[in-house]
Image 1 (spheres, helix red, strand yellow):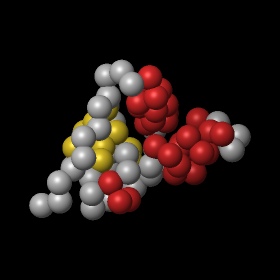
Image 2 (image 1 turned 30 degrees about the vertical axis):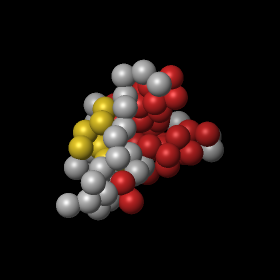
Image 3 (image 1 turned 90 degrees about the vertical axis):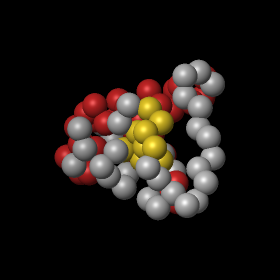
Length: 79
């Protein structure tokens, strides 16, 4: 497991190494999809048992990744 951004981790044993919210199996991709699909922060929090800060962290991670700033993901080597 490697923390790649605040509250966001990657682990090759969890969800095929996709970025997930720490302590969950919920991916950044899923949270962004929930938001695009019309869910608000409170609905996501209630439905999936995550904190508002987790939703914000997924947005921040995605924005940083797309900007090419701060967050650099390196390929994990299976041990």
